[in-house]
Amino acid sequence: MIPPALRRVTLSLLLPLALASCRRSPQPEPALAQQATDTAADTQVLHDAVAAANEVVRNAADCEAARPTIAAARRTFDDVQPRLRTGAAQTSLAALRKQVDHVADLCP
Image (cartoon, rainbow, N blue to C red; front, side, top):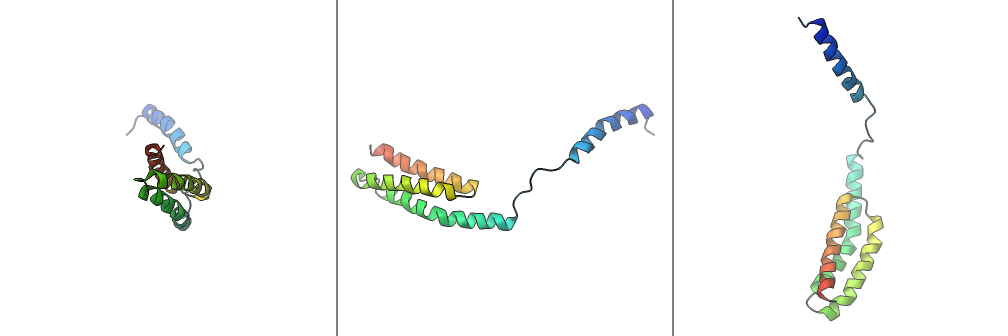
C-alpha cells in the first residue's frame, strides 16, 4: 500500500502533466494526398529550373557561352521560387542556384 503522503506528492506531480497533455495540439500535418499533390506540382515547376541549370553546367568550360545562360538561369530561378510549395523543392532550388553561382564565380 502506498503511504498517503507519497500518493499526494505523486498526484500533485502527475496532475499538471496530465492536464498539459490534454491541451489542443498544434495544427495537424496536411493530408498525405495534399503532400503528394504539392510534390507533383513542385516536380513540374522545377523542370524549367533544372533545365536552365543544366545548360549553365553544360557551358561551364566556355565562359563566353556560359554568361548568357547564367543570367537566364537566375531569371528562371526567380520566376520559379514563388511557385514552389514544399521545403524539399526550396532546398533543391537552392542547390541549383549554388551550382550556377559556382560557374558564375569561375566566369567573371
